[in-house]
Length: 221
Ligand code: AP5
Image 1 (tube, rainbow, N blue to C red):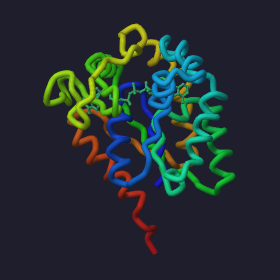
Image 2 (image 1 turned 90 degrees about the horizontal axis):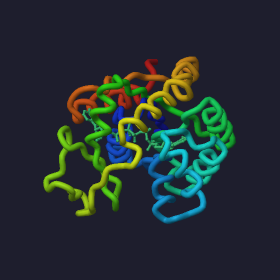
Image 3 (image 1 turned 120 degrees about the vertical axis):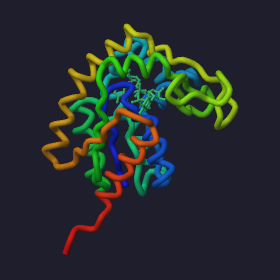
C-alpha cells in the first residue's frame, strides 16, 4: 500500500499515519519528523531546515526531495509506505512521480483530511510530542496517562516550537498557497479520497481504514 496524507497542519495526518503504518506494516515517513530528527542530531540538513521551520515556511524543494529519495530507497519501504507531509508543492509531487516511475511503484491513494482553521489552532496549541519516540498527544483530545510523560516509552513530552499561534497562521497560509493545488493535481489522476477528519480520533481512524479497505477491494468482474 502506498499512501499520501494530505491536509493542513494539525489535520491529524501524523496521528492517523502512525495507525495506518501499524495496520499495514508499512513505514510512516514524515518529512517533518525527519527534519526534526536531523535538527536533534545537529546535522547540516537540520541546521538548514531550521530557519524555515521556525518561521512556518516550507523548506526548499531540492532539500526535501533529496531526503525523500534516499528514504524511499531503504529496504523497509520497498513494499509500501505512508508519506506524511510530502509532497507539499507541485514541484515535489512531480519529483515524486519521477522517482516512482523509475521503480514502477505507483501511488495507491491520496487521503485528504479537512479541518477548519480554528480547530487547527486549538489542536496544535494543545499538541504534545514525545522527544524520544515521536508519539503524538493532545492535552484534551488524547492526553497521556501521566502529564508530560509518554505512555509508549516513558519519554518526555514537549511542545513543538512551531506550534505557536503566529507560526501556525503562517503554516496555514502556506498550505493554502503551496499545497492546496495538489488536491486538484491528484483529483485529476483519480487518486484523491476524502476523510472526515473532525470528531473522535478513533472514529477518524475507522473512517480512514474504511477508505483503504475500499481501495483494496478487487475490481468487480
Ligand atoms: P510537519 O511536521 O509535517 O507539520 P504539518 O504538516 O504542519 O503537520 P502537523 O505535524 O502540524 O499536523 P498533523 O496533520 O500531522 O497533525 P497531528 O496528527 O500531529 O512539518 C513541519 C515543518 O517542516 C513545515 O512547516 C516545514 O517547514 C517543514 N516541512 C515538512 N515537510 C516539508 C515538505 N514536504 N516541504 C517543505 N517543508 C517541509 O495532530 C495535531 C494535534 O491534534 C495533536 O495534538 C493530536 O493529538 C490532535 N488530534 C489529531 N486528531 C484529532 C481529532 N480527530 N480530534 C481532536 N484532536 C486531534
